[in-house]
Amino acid sequence: MERGLFWLPLLAIFFWLAWQGSQEYQKVEAYRVWAEQFERSKYDIYAVLGQKGDNITWGKPTVKGPIQLETFSLLDIQNINLLVDGKIVDVENIPDKGRTVELEFLFPEPSNSVKIPFTEIPLATEWGKYLQSALQSLHS
Image 1 (cartoon, rainbow, N blue to C red):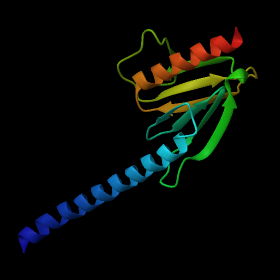
Image 2 (spheres, helix red, strand yellow; image 1 turned 180 degrees about the vertical axis):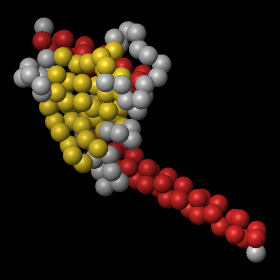
Image 3 (cartoon, rainbow, N blue to C red; image 1 turned 135 degrees about the vertical axis):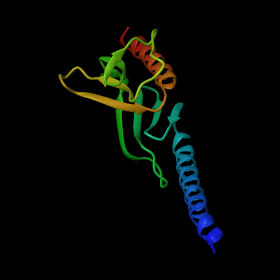
């Protein structure tokens, strides 16, 4: 009897982990279908991001597909910043760690920006460099 009571919580944890894995798999599959329309895209637990031409679309991943989608044009962007823990970071000298990582897209209007969260600093840096070069080629 005591052994059964010992294994019961472990069995519950196993089923919870299996359910969590199933949910994440469904999110990734929904993202995969959504991302087919873009030239370049990224998925992580915080946000999905897709680029098609000059347009950037981003939103929150769910098992039924991305929600809260927003689209903006790189033509409307004034600058792109990499933020780690809320501070602007030089993409050539990135920190090893950070609690929050975001790409900030600044519009010409004061106090108007879009912040897209990332889970990893190197991934955000790669996207930041790529989009910054695309932005510079559009404005030149």
